[in-house]
Length: 390
Image (cartoon, rainbow, N blue to C red; front, side, top):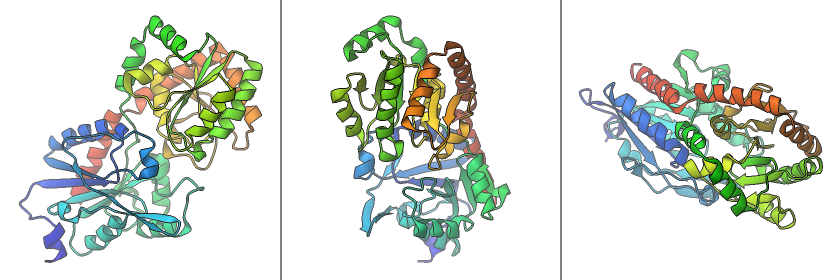
């Protein structure tokens, strides 16, 4: 059978778009639901094919579910220090007009789709960052492969304007790149936060053993790149200046033990694991500020929705969503070489400045209204329709 026969579509068939992704994170469920509905109104059928997380990702405990998504069993293959991923779904792509994949050098399927695209297969869209922004995990071979394939695609779905600059500077036409402004559904989180009652907060403080002093919220997965060790050291400095300040750790991951070990000698460190929805809103309602000295990603949007300004550092490894942070308007972004002592002093100063915090909260509120999953789904759908029209 020819490649066109295996993966192409008959000219009279309805337009069909398939997104293939390694996993289905909890935070993507609402986006896929909205995107499917928006595309359906334009005569486009969306299919989603997802696999299971690897052992490391499984520790984050944030896998979601969609009844209409097709589940496959990824095969994770170790090659030296690299881990490649085979997503066994070629037959399921039959009849697709456009296949959209994550831009990642370790995904074997991507190379197959790049090759078949030239031989009559479906159009190909890439969705990603353009480059690996985390220089601690960046592979020279992987970045070389990604750069080589970056221009050999039909459409780019860029996380942010920063991603588009990366893609177009590498030679991809700007007219075929859609900036989706990566977002998650925070509407329910905003509503849940607004509904938290004082008695609920007091009950939770009592349950956790938290006094009436200011609370800082760690709201993130817990990996080495998030710098949990730095955070523990920095909060020692916060406590030296504000003796009743407490650290509430909401999240999970392979470095959770850093905080758990710290809590044995520091009763003001409270590790509660991953929380979602109203439960997350309740925990967050105790806090005045979000602390994240390491890699920043979608937590930016949670901080906006909860109106909790984030304090972070200007590191090279941040995810694209760091573009949404504006120092002094909706967050505090410190220099990359900030020490734990300097970070802790800045946090303490912000906790003591009620007027300054109110100003940053207004900036968070504005950011939450701007970066929404509804707007992302609209932009993504427009990009899909444009790609199909090529």
